[in-house]
Image (cartoon, rainbow, N blue to C red; front, side, top):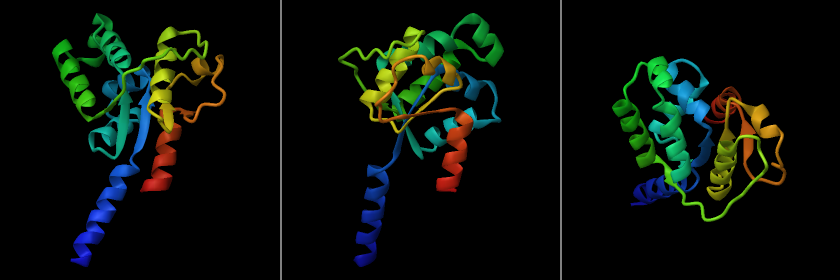
Length: 162
């Protein structure tokens, strides 16, 4: 009886404190482009449910729009239907957020503002992007999430969790 209570406590603790991340579209693209590298490793962490991806409808459609462009489908060697299946799986596993406000840190790319909104609304610990410089020009001071590259996130993850 004591052992089963301990297992319940450990299981509950793990669920409550799972890390939440938000990913920029370039990380998803890189993860699908190559099975090697940090971006793909992060995708595997999401699929293995070791971390939770935060997603909003706006981000989902941004992923869809970018990944299903003809030139990107050719680069990825995938069909639109395969992309839809992957995005549907990510949406199934993700922590979903509806954004009811506009948070504008004045980034050059409007889609980057949407990514920041999702990271903020979801209380993500990390916003992962390959284009850190795109996020540096805005007013990102005071946000709880940390802006990191896929490589830096993987180094941190492996140091703390493996």
